[in-house]
Length: 179
Ligand code: AMP
Image 1 (cartoon, rainbow, N blue to C red):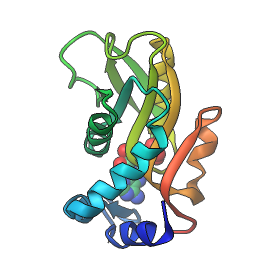
Image 2 (cartoon, protein in one colour):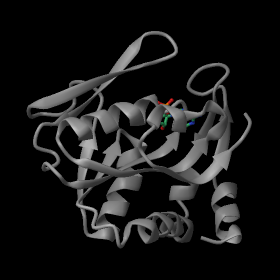
Image 3 (tube, helix red, strand yellow):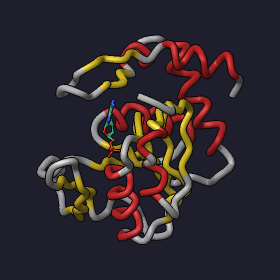
Image 4 (spheres, rainbow, N blue to C red):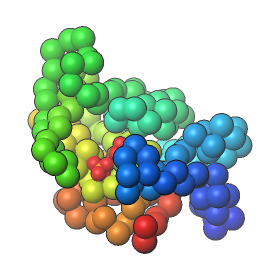
């Protein structure tokens, strides 16, 4: 991954102030996804990283993680599974809770989504506080599978989400060090 590629990906991300609520600077990846060559470049950066890692399953986190995760799974010839908000998955599920600024939320996975000992990459568009990805990693562990790495297009480094994900490995294409 070279600096020009990273810079072109960075420039395709749109900052939307005060979405979905006042005070949040939303990193909108839709302009990136809408640009074919840049979307492919983004997925290829991730795929190059995991090509030799014998990945069985890419686990996408609802909802933008489905887009990144499914494209990555296809490229790696790996399976794709989904972690979803409560009540969305039709079959038996495990669930894990995580803290929000106010209160808690939870995520669900099908009990048969990943086989035991599978090698898994967790994918999402962005890591902020790390709570979402940490709950997802907990679900993977509960199914007896191994988190090879958590992969993101964007990392809001100043929120220190990596710390919450310890001891799992974290990779991001773009880092933002201040708001
Ligand atoms: P967190 O659990 O705090 O790491 O939040 C990560 C999840 O929330 C990801 O699924 C992101 O898509 C979403 N998210 C959090 N903050 C932002 C942001 N500033 N811009 C876009 N998405 C965000």
